[in-house]
Amino acid sequence: MCGIVGYLGFQDPKKIIIDGLKKLEYRGYDSAGIAILNDGKTKRVRAAGKIINLEEKLINENFNGHIGIGHTRWATHGAPNEKNAHPHQVGAISLVHNGIIENYLEIKKDLIARGAEIKSDTDSELVAHLVNEEIQVTNNLLLAVQKTLGKLIGAFSIVVMWEKSPNELVAFKDGPPLIVGVGEKENFIVSDVQAALQYTKNFVYLEDREIVHIHNNDLKYYSALGAPLKKQITTVDWNTEQVEKMGFKHYMLKEIYEQPRAVAAAIRPHINTELHSVQMESLGFAKSNSETFKTIDRIMFVACGTSFYAAMLGKYLIEQASGLPVEIDVASEFRYRKPIIPKNTLLITISQSGETADTLAAIRLAKEKGALTLSITNVQRSSIDREAHGHLYMNSGVEIGVASTKAFTSTIALLNVLALQIAKDRGAMTPEQEKNYVVQLLATPSQIEGVLAYDKYFSEAAKKLQTFKGFLYLGRGVSYPIALEGALKLKELAYMHAEGYAAGEMKHGPLALIDASMAIVVVAPTDDLIEKTISNLQEAKARGGKIISIGTGDNKALQSMSEYYLSIPASSWMAHPLISVVPLQLMSYHLADSLGYDVDQPRNLAKSVTVE
Ligand code: AGP
Image (cartoon, rainbow, N blue to C red; front, side, top):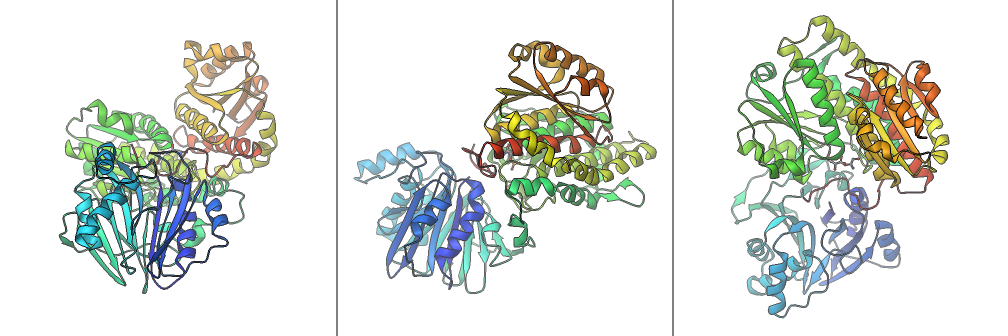
């Protein structure tokens, strides 16, 4: 949450910082601000709301200079207004902050006792006060920041600029990401490489409790205690085209359409397409993949939100394919329930961003307790990826829409491969079965394209769907996590009440909600559970509920009871969720768009949740 851009170089800092902040707006859009230093004076402009509001304020503002910092905020402490927007300025110090200062109340009390005038409700401003106090003593920005760090408790990253020294920036990371972009005679400090990718492909990832001191063209790295560090430059090969909309109305729609390619890219490194067999690339464990999979006794998945629903699917896939027991946990619960992690457990985290604070804390806890860990991430070299013993990559390309789509389907594709590989290594699957599953998995990209062809159908139906008071999403087996994901997409995009349920649970409570204003969205492929699902739907229909169904083939029974029936291609039970989630994504997208909502940046949310 919150996006940071710092710049020191020869170009116009205003342009670079604003362009960078736009790329980071997915991290928060409650307010934005910029501070640029010129001729010994800091000029600061801030605005509540999105970056566009800041840009409007900047139209008539001229900035000179070559150094500045900017911020886009996801509010934690203090309302999302201009007063609380970053950068915060105290004396000659300007500061941007991402994260939470846990001991802020104590710091505030002490600062007030020392006569400080506090202007905002944020924890961030307090850090600027502390640096300002220290700099009066040290007259040295690096030292002032180092001394301040010892007074702060929490998970946070900061970038600090000092009016009296126009050629230096000091940044510190402990928790939320901060990455140094290394250019030619210019340097950047950003929350995500996307913010500087158009200027450089060379980046240095700060680890927790590390400082970077940018002084003219010189970059020096230190531990929080001041010990010099050597850091490696990583070259990132994402191109900037991947972060443009490419003619689509929204990033989310573009990302939905990218799914055939994203799914293919996720599985490509792990499948032998000639033999139709799984051959997972080395995951990076000390032992080979197959030795690892033979010796583990259980898998535990930990994740949040959409990634958690992918983990739920992982349980169905791995347990049924290989017989290996699988547990799943929401990351925010995992570490506080004092989890028991038996010997020979493989703990798998799923995270698109690789930065979700609860998931990161979970993997650290699991390591402390001796578990072997595997991360499934989209963003390579993200905090979670760096923490894990083994690594699997979604390869989805940059996902900008706050609502996750292609990262979800890429993950399900990877979980298919993982389940098949584990089953194969543990002798739970015949070569014929393996071949059959792989053939069906390889067909899913073109089957998803087939579903995307129904896009017009959803955009036309969207207006009619607006009239429903609420939505119940139902599914059984592997379609149950898909129902949960469908309901989440509708909630976060269209702000409508939606719940996901296992179809068999209806009669245990939710049936009481059903009347003619309630839509029941059911994912019901023709499998061995279809008859049971149809019975559940009869119960809902008898009470006036209106049914929207996603089925396979020409399922007459399902069709006759539905207001809307969409037939999608059939596949193996393992791969089918990859296809069945797509209509639910399109439905939520078009419904939200028809209501005029901001699809890419739904209210109150952020793409990367780096606070607990
Ligand atoms: C998805 O649409 C959500 N915006 C959200 O639930 C997301 O999946 C969750 O915050 C986890 O993010 P991660 O995959 O980056 O860890």
